[in-house]
Image (cartoon, rainbow, N blue to C red; front, side):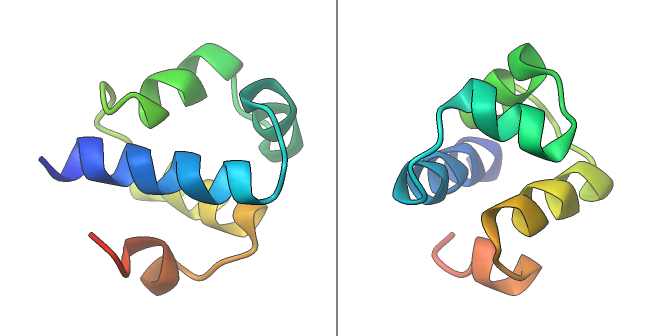
Length: 68
């Protein structure tokens, strides 16, 4: 399912920049528990929050969705 695949992709990129969920969520101004549920594929996330995550990861939206 795309929500789960997106969560896995976000986790992989976040880990690639060496940040914990807590530090990354703080960096992008998002609640850690909300962000954790996004990574777990349990949240139908809005495009606004997807953009915040992409910006925090330093990637474009197209790059974020590239491997899905």
